[in-house]
Image (cartoon, rainbow, N blue to C red; front, side, top):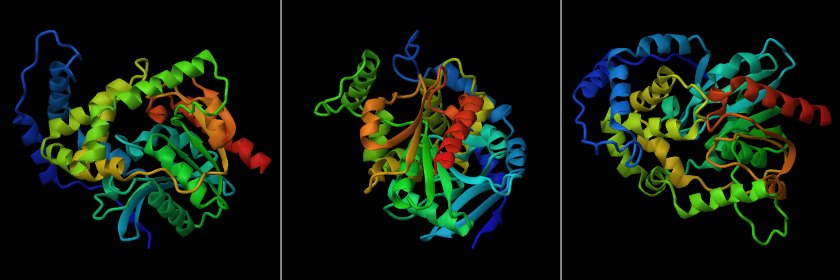
Length: 362
């Protein structure tokens, strides 16, 4: 059963948030430390004070409620999604999947341009936001992909495309693997490629530099990733109890993963942070780092890749082509990890170009 859904956070939860922010217990900071020890204290105090005194959740909640929200239950788990139908009855359906520390909010700026050509389904990953929390083991990328296939079937879409970044890329590729007869193609804006010394492929200097970056990340696993992959419950206690803890946990990722030329407004980021806080999904969202294996079956449907210059890593095409049927490859001149927020026009155009090509070929 699919039911309409409306966002309506209890006022008591908002009052509790304001009270906790007012009573924050701040650490000291080494003078002139900058980013040497982590997120700068002055910037975090600025964000926290803005969240407490100027940010208006109700205004953003009202704007979000202008979208058509729905929920359904799949395998005992509530799934929240936005469903925007195109004015074109014959439009291709497209399921857009976010990652961590994102949410369905990542796609707000591309709904209008993409809905000209696609029926859009924008779910929240199980354990995230209004699809959370999860209550059992096993919600890995493959299980989520199977849930997406069931969701699209319930909505009456027999053929559709998939798009994603971060975890959304893995889920979208897994969807192409578990439902290849229905998925016309997968577009991703994040596709890690690991070094393959035995591949026998001659790589360019640019590709080698990209692999050096990957090697450095593999040798020095980011602390947030290690904590969420190894002990998501442990870090979840702190993030669920302290709004400033939840704020800095996500704000640091926005600061480090976005293109410095991209202007992601504080209110936009705070809405994403608030979604995690108000749904108490810090721990359940972190569990995906613990539970997410690669897809069991290879994705054999056409794949399009958008490479962002300021993303965590940049894909190496010759290595990607060993694993996927690459039909489309775009090297963006700007943008980072949050492509649909940072460069929505470029993102929407690239998604449109890819699916036009694969549906024409098909």
